[in-house]
Length: 170
Image 1: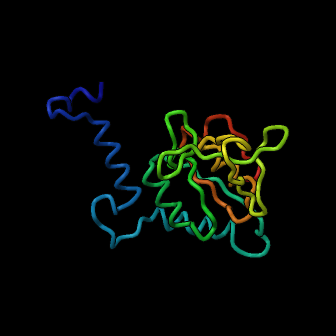
Image 2: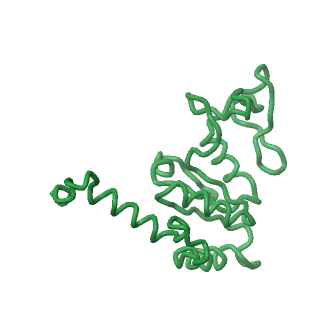
Image 3: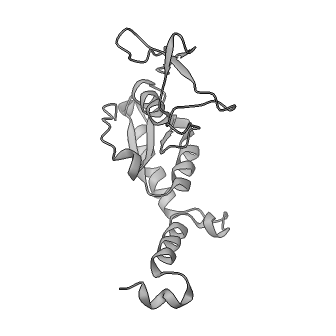
């Protein structure tokens, strides 16, 4: 009902409301890179209080965001904490499997139980088609976050983070 009065402008109220919400999240959306988002400053304070210092060594954190651009901004902003984006941003084929720059499906070593084998940094070990199996792009980020001690923040959107995955590391 609320949207009907705006129909004559060929745009609804709700798309405008969403655009305004995005602008409020980050002034860079309207070309104001000189102004830092108050939301980002508050998030910086929260992240550093939870992850910096000896008493917080080994802690991990989940951040949920609504917008893809916001996830990408936070991944870049918190790269010093090894931030991973959990939203489908990795290159993948039509089945969701992780691919390389040429579009080839990537394979990773598995053990006798079909679990991915990890290197000393908690990353899946690359393999060929005969000795490995493909991994879904979202699962790759989840495995990396769960097992890599250097990856301390996982930034997800609500759709990906609400799939019923268990992120016990956080």
